[in-house]
Image (tube, rainbow, N blue to C red):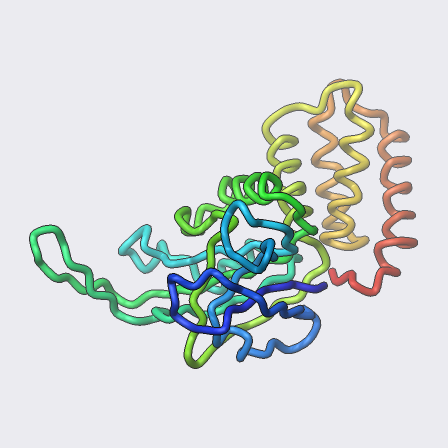
Length: 265
């Protein structure tokens, strides 16, 4: 999968608004960390001029993990937490300038306190192509609702991130976009919180069968999850109907999903 970012010709310049350098990153290949030696954005803007109004398109979102929400180390989000949360979605971690550094904070009364070092990094997450600011804002709202660990102040379409002098970054490949993951999570929440009524049982169970097969493969775990979801149907589907749905999903999985070279379970 490809992730596209746009870099400036400078580093650490808050006033700069020009991001003319397009870089396409293949998530199947090792990351060239030097990309992040300059300030960067995750969107193409009209005239390369960064602003919310000039948003043109994007195939990723950028989010910030600063861990300022708590002073308890046990409540900080780490790289491992992100990997677990975004399982299946390609993404890049770029460690920020203040990663694992103590931070001095001046209070209103002039007192200086030191906040202990903690993980701080940027996430660049692969999405389906986004072609409007409205679409971008909607996706960020959906992401923020399901992933509480992001910095809510850094979610507008015109946001940029600072490059670092000695860039450190890690890349993780996957087989689905963030949009697809959010669809799955929202679908799971809807199924778990309510019954599946007559009239939508077949469509709901077909979609769920495809989801668990894609995520877990053709094995006991996927079938157990499918059968458990079927208990939410009201009235219950006949066993023969559930078997037909499952076999249809299996055929699609074997003929289409498994033969897709980008698929990784």
